[in-house]
Image (tube, rainbow, N blue to C red):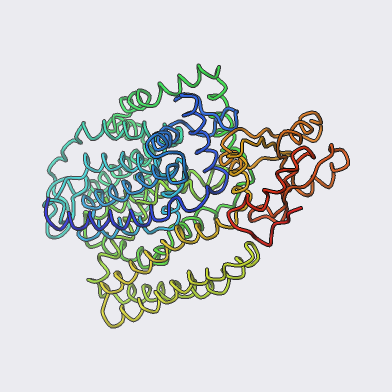
Length: 615
């Protein structure tokens, strides 16, 4: 390996490790998915069961087992902690950054591969997913690994990967100086990388279900079919000039609807063999968990969490047709500000450089397949688009690499506009973030520094671009994106997590061997930090409520407590405080015989706070 790639890989590793692992265990598990996944792995490890996932003593059929296996391995090596639950995702995220670099070395001229990987590592939502105990990071890694195998099989390496690779459209023969292909037949794809592609997608299926295979396979299928249509259109173009515009369009439509063409595409992909490989990799676990649960896991996983999720919005996750375009812009921030000049740059390069057309086609299909499919699905979450982020990063990385060499007025003008937009976003964040923090957290006005980073970075990038050129701008954006993303995903969560008093209390209660039960609802984070199952009772469970008060602590929302207070056995309120980021309060009730816990209440929290009420 040459010295330059080694230096770039080392730099990418350093950037990825800092962003994905800095303060990784300093914040408590977020949302509901992280504690569910981490708690499920803990329960499976305690039982020594690698097949059936359970959480809080109940079957968890939301996700397959790959993430649980990764977390269980980390628990076994490092012990049970937030860091152990997340470190697997950080490793997968780093691997995806390196895979994006490898794909860029095949598809893009230097230094597009490096800038693509840098963009991916500093994209906001990708960095969050690489620091979360969720199946997104392994899904993205194995999906990208499969596409990287396809690129290795389909796109030849040109001059050691330094100059522009030739796609199948250009491989009709050697590309001439005029940019038109000659008529030498294209070589066939290599078999071994294609087998690796399907094996990787089999592991992706173990990470999050059929989408791990179906969607990346659809990307390759669409790319090969459309690429073949374009080649055939170019081959018949000279003889079809007399057909006119309408005749030419009808000819292209006929090719698109040709069953034979798409059948040949499936054969070129070796789709039947690929399906066998995916089933061989993922099938044994699905079969085993189906047998072990008498079909309950398979039924709930496929019918509820796939079919029903596609037909109707679950858990309130709904949105309009504009949801995913907006989510893509937010998730790929801060690099998404360059969307317009990036499109203009690619449009210009696809006109002047023949080989870039196939690259643009592959990356466009990669993004549009995910965007189109999930726009149809009724349940909408921003994280669903994460597997196409490497393609977005490759788009932006090529733009950044080409920017120092372009003198096109439109591209330079839109680049300046993008820097202005970045500054405006920073200014708005400086004003709004302290207000939001004050309302939800009762402080933390220092979060205005996030907006200041963007505003100061935009001012610096403007000056660098005007006085030093495009290379200085890209370096300035790298520094801005790195500092902003590190602050947003590492430092901010660690500080905000200090306001989560209830998890700290429940964790201490778990260490004191005190029983805990909950009425009406039970947050997954409570179960994880308690370390044991927390029974979820209803208002009618009078006997269980009485036993919970006599043996331990009962968690009750304040509104529910006001309705059932008169029906409860004798009790006292141990401590009351706000639910994290919610307006309601949570009360911790104990029976008279557990009055000794009152003397310890002030020591149950990590730090005293005026928001808590000790009674």
